[in-house]
Length: 114
Image 1 (cartoon, one colour):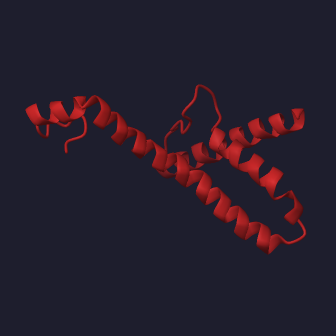
Image 2 (cartoon, rainbow, N blue to C red):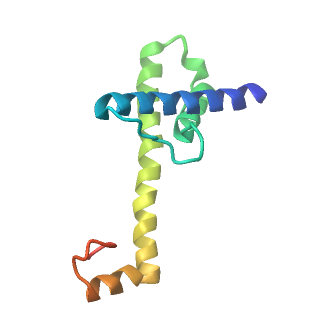
């Protein structure tokens, strides 16, 4: 269990480092790609743990391992992004604050304008 926790943090930090280097190269500036306080992105740690735990038996079949890993990582990236939009729409409907603001000040550049 300790090994899995350590690997989770190692992959989370490695993913953060990769994204920071990539965006630093593209934009010629330091851009912190993390969403938490500290140098890690838990999406990389979660993905790597799922791959290690669920797909460990496919190590002798690299093509199948690659294809299943590609699909699994796509699902891991897609589900949280969809949930973010669903949550935004639900909060807008429940509280209606953004809709009311948009009715009184259309195209003010603040909030969601429907």
